[in-house]
Length: 486
Image 1 (cartoon, rainbow, N blue to C red):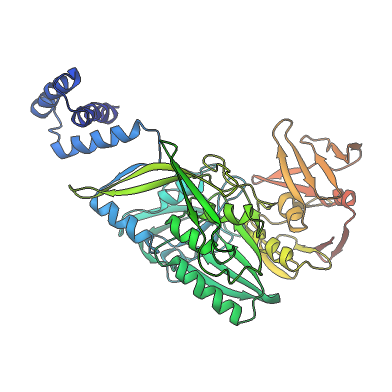
Image 2: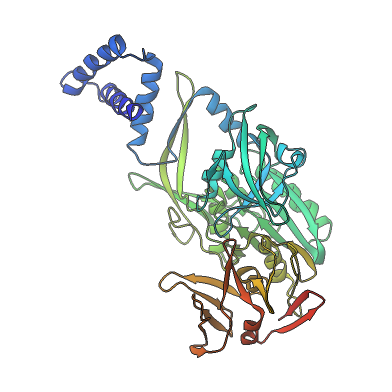
């Protein structure tokens, strides 16, 4: 409370200086208050700390999380992060139903050395529960000053909950990574939109095309953005020269548009873009433009919704002010701020998003998902996929993780807040599962009786195997292994 009061008082001082004028009563009052605080307050506050409080108090009144004052050391860290260098522990997180899951660890990082692995679920940071927090906030809590420690509470099915204490270290992450997948599919992951990203992307694209890639998956999950111009340049690989990629509009309603340049050397490649709620800023500029132009299918979940432009203004006293100066609009004039981009294909299970993209680009003759009792792993269309919660057996009833199962088979799964029901749909099917012990289900608007109820265990919803008869699926059970074919 005292700290907040100090900030508010200091903010008044800072405003007085900005609005300079002897007629301002607050200026004189603050000078008196400042004098009393400096001479009499028991904490003997430093003047520099009071000025910092004034600056931060002023910024707080804007209610804008993206406008920040960066001290010289913070400015250096910010600049380094845009080049793929940051301080952290080296884990990439994806969203889960309540808690994020580890998608991968960076080679040689503290997390990898400590045995953190893909499929782990992150429950706490330094003892604080992170349920329902946004990915950017969680990432910010994990990062920090080099040489300091952070304690993560991890959940792993075969081990239970456990803590790992990691030493924050400098992480060097390339802005772009590429890989050739089976079936002539190229895969490019953009980690950050930095100064070299557009050139790195073009190099990766050429490498994949020379290896025979004819289709492309662009992974923007967890990418917080960066330079707007990098997104515009990358869009030029897919869209003809002279097309608007993004427009920014300032407080005076002045509009500035950014256009594609160069030759679209990937124009004929079928494109799927992976997005999640950690895809923000420049990621949304690129994904939104390519979605508007109809050259890409967005797969995953709704993006973060950061639709504002920040200008970094160096300060003569050192450091910089990162100031929100405009909003951006997609080519179809969509506003993304606080809304995000909706995916064309919703897949909320992070471990299945890549498989969904591969199936979109190379549709299989049949979709299969295979599970083994008690194992945290599944086989989806022949590929091994991490399963955060294993299948369960209670009595003579087998249960499978509901969302994972149906999204693996190409259905859309939505929780209905009005009545708590879970809707599972595709082009031919609509099934509603209702909560409660009696297992109420409706299929295509008709009530279905005699079904086993859903099961809630370890914050996961499970569907009984018997309910799959409603979906015209082929189910085989052999020695504890359950295989479903669509």
